[in-house]
Length: 130
Image (cartoon, rainbow, N blue to C red; front, side):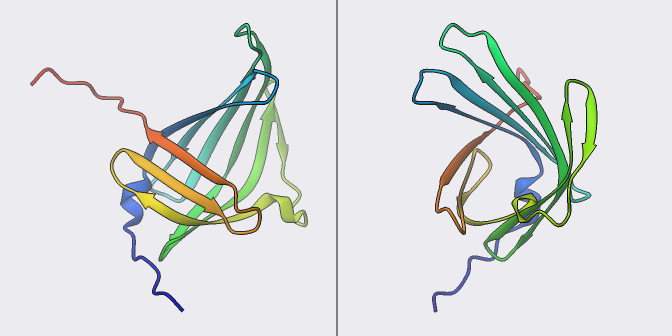
């Protein structure tokens, strides 16, 4: 069995972004705020091909990194300013991913079950002129 990468969880902390063009021309966006205390906030939105907002939601939960395995546990979802607690018996609220690449700019990971690959880019929130 190949040896797992030993990654530093500090590399994940911060804000990340990804977008994906869907088959109908709409665009799915995700902003991920990954906190040092093990919590996360994922904001999802879908805009139609004209740029109009179709759908928006926020997922709150916990995350972790063990070796090269990144995992998330959804705890709540916010839709139209209403917060709903997650059903902890629902297996769809638990996800595990193999980290393919992680550095200060890119977070590429693959879902353990579906094999879907996601590529997120770090959002730089402090721009300096020096």
